[in-house]
Image (cartoon, rainbow, N blue to C red; front, side, top):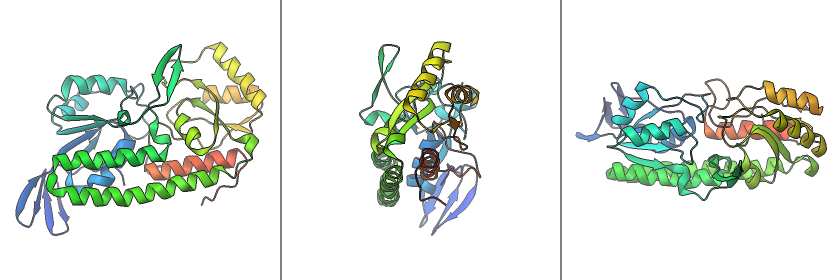
Length: 309
């Protein structure tokens, strides 16, 4: 389920009616909180739990890189009117985090990733929390539970609704977590190495039995790789003997294609979705669909036998 926008519309909901920002149930008008989120991933999780009992809007659209996104006046206006703001944190979306701190003064602000203990990466000698926590599905389960708690604080009389939605989604996520592990096990052990454009898959590799074999960029995409970094990655790929490397949808694939050509390996036909969900028709419109598509792509390119459509 994607992010939903209901303001100014009328929508029948069971025995109630959504009118603008209000939900009328059994004749009682209940204000729906205005919930603003930064990324498409968070929009999906919040939408799964809140559904029609909240007014949900996402600042980022599918395919947009949160690392380098420059906020707009419309983003500032949405944040100024918000009751509750969910963002990733750990500096995934630096421009938006600065804007949230400056404008969302009247809102409850929640950095979802920061409820978790991060993997700490070495970025030019500086220990830096890796923000890509959703690579491990178990982390998403914890964040969804936190989302349900925060929404309950906003609308206490909808607690049962939010908790039921979170429980149903948790069951889906638990099934996904098990399925990913099973697919990765079909990859020949020597091939269980992931080489990507940027360091967005450390949680995924750690959770599901892969190794990170290098990347062109660190955990952020703000800086371009040096010629030395490119040359080093080429040598690493040759030494590892991996059958394929992976481009990502939010980044220009040209550099990783050059690296692959020099190292004598293929670039997987399907790009991986790292920091954003896909557009309509992509097969990665939701978090669950994205994780399944990524896993199918990785397993097939590394010589495994994925159970995929």
